[in-house]
Image (cartoon, rainbow, N blue to C red; front, side, top):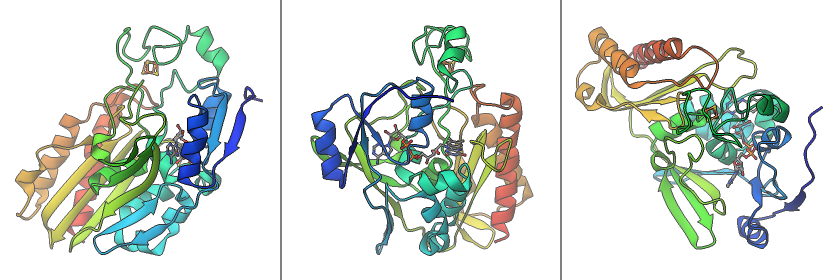
Length: 323
Ligand SMILES: Cc1cc2nc3c(=O)[nH]c(=O)nc-3n(C[C@H](O)[C@H](O)[C@H](O)COP(=O)(O)OP(=O)(O)OC[C@H]3O[C@@H](n4cnc5c(N)ncnc54)[C@H](O)[C@@H]3O)c2cc1C
Ligand code: SF4
């Protein structure tokens, strides 16, 4: 059995209350569903003295004229089953439904899914396992076992909902000691597995605002993993577009779980406004292969995962162009 070191738990009943509790304990960490944080505490990766619990804060989905506002405390199970999310933001409901297992989705929140720690084969291990290896650059060591050097951490951003939220151009509402601010989810992630989030430890993610997709919206999310019943993604591919027949007028493709930073594909403008025939689909799949550089920080060979990025893009576009 993995035990946790002792900590004090402070239960917040609102975002403002959570901020107040954090301000009284600036070394505290927030915990929502705990399905990412608590395994890391059990592995000795984090040793918080105080946890500020967010489970008393309600989530929910609110339809607005031009957007869908989703509370960060919304459970993934509720998100996956919400009729408006299924109807308007189908790929997001799909991605939420593919996270982990039913038990975990019943606890896990959207906010935690966006802010979960990066993952690595050499890092998400017990304390004694990591100690036997001499630890690693990300925690207590000096060497990256993936890169084979002392400078860079390429632990993977491994959330299922994040590639879809990037493809949908979601905005994040944050609340910190100096007030509220909005950040585009595209600007949240850095290519640094040790410090991949551009937010302060004090800041709370309160809401996620997704613009309502335009007419002719079609999209999908596909996930590569070893066991469909529970595993994290080895690769996640979100494809979202606005279509008139087999012609895309807007197209976004985002590759997740390949590196510390989700990767929007570049160069898709050239394919807009003309029918997406087989040749065009293969060209875009080739772009996916060229621009996806999976790191060996998660299971599955990097070359295979790179190839699968192209396969998933080809499959998605072939299905979406046919409606
Ligand atoms: C066996 C297993 C399998 C899993 N499989 C998957 C998978 O397939 N796909 C996947 O995406 N994830 C997976 N996960 C990870 C995890 O379950 C999800 O990412 C989940 O959505 C995390 O949400 P949470 O509410 O439990 O986050 P928590 O663990 O509570 O928090 C995660 C991080 O976010 C911070 N945080 C949470 N909410 C806020 C907020 N509102 N404001 C500021 N900071 C906040 C916490 O401080 C912490 O650093 C798996 C976990 C396990 C244990
Ligand atoms: S990528 Fe390297 S530094 Fe980062 S967690 Fe893995 S082994 Fe550690």
